Image (cartoon, chains in turn red, blue):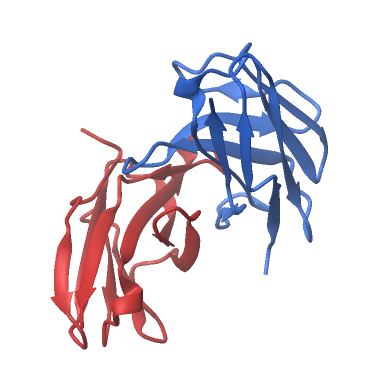
Length: 113
Length: 115
């Protein structure tokens, strides 16, 4: 089992719709969870971080964390074509070292106008 | 916010030469930096963890004698690709964070092309 799993996609949504991106992780002691966005040919940029169970909202983005289910998700409301990118889920935990992140393979999102 | 600067952004070199890539944390001190490699349409692959003042820790399958890492100060890590070959052509990205459990911030990456 991979440490961090994501559906590779592509996930296709129409402009204005909600895009839902999901991620599961295997390390039960994971403490920190991050979503990054990566445009083709560019390096990843941080979108959201979440550390406790529940929802965290920032603009059009909402991160959701359920530690019991070892599940973290990212919702993008009012999706725009500019949101088309690969979204990487990253998890940190004691077993991976305090600063080392384990990345999923990413989900490619396509938002059509 | 935290800024990581990486240089150069793009380099083309001939097979057999060495290339040095610099990674700097501009507004925070980073005792640990990470070097990733990404081939086209593939995911990020961690190559090594750079530790200030000590030897780097390499991931399985990464040749330490080929990818030399030096982390001489709290704000600078360098990756040298020695005797580069065309198969080393890739997108190399460094990252760092200021403290444990905080997000990693990435440099803009270096696109290496070996001819």
